[in-house]
Length: 416
Image: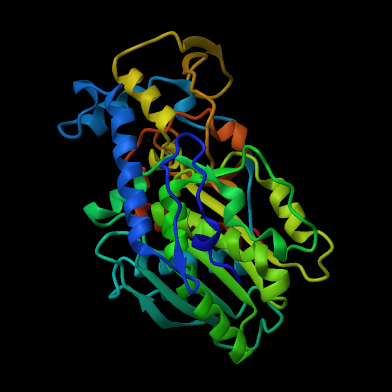
């Protein structure tokens, strides 16, 4: 299998760096990837600095001010949008285990545990000093009984990528230029050639991080494949780790028919920032076309209602900067039929340049007067999601996601 880096003579969509990324023996040149991140970060900061002034400085009560300003607008909440989403208890278990693995990659002392399952850590990839290689853990999961021996999702290999935990990680996050994502797929491995999609692009920094991890991920998948007991690979991660996991998932899914014919691939992320151009549903259709084996498992992007990070791209940041500046031409009155008000202003946002990979499932916690909190999960379309004004930094915390996923599991049992 060709590595991502070997194909990524990246052709940036927005601006060329005037160079290509070279590789040796299938191993990505981490120095070149690091340089690309540094240059991309410099460009990103330069672009932002042209627009941002003292009203958007990091510090003080910015997060409080931003959340307070957003709350004045109707689209800071989902309202009556979306469609109720439910899942089977076995799927809820897997989602909760994925969240636990996503937490374990931040702290090795917090190994995932779920009653009725055997979860074992296989190996760990340490992060590089330059931030290109993100910390990654590999776990195997299976049932501790034979009651559900026919479960198509178990046993599984869970690959968890860590999000932002060091200052150096921002080199990846801020390298936000767009690159041709067609190069991150191996169309030669597909049974049906993938048409070149002119607008199929990805976040440059996350693509570099995925390229740097591909060799280690390949080695581990081949190892469990050789052992012959695991036929399901699940990519997961929180925040930026979810974005990188998404791109690795897309890459390995594209080569599955040729390199891993017995494998099924899933991706479950928590609070991932946007990473690819909005509509990639056709990509999945081409990957699955003519396949006798269903290679696509679960593709879920969980978002806590209000999570700021889930909406972050350049144009969105500039829009909420204007929100802090008070008012603007985007504000109009809108009739609405939810319980918040009969008429609430809406903050109109620019069209999203990027989105997450997978079905967007919004996790909600609502308080109705003095009643107990009501938890729900809603399936939201990319178009609807791109209209939401999310500015709550606290909603991004992984522990909040874990709490909401536990409530999701409780509801899955109640719905039996």
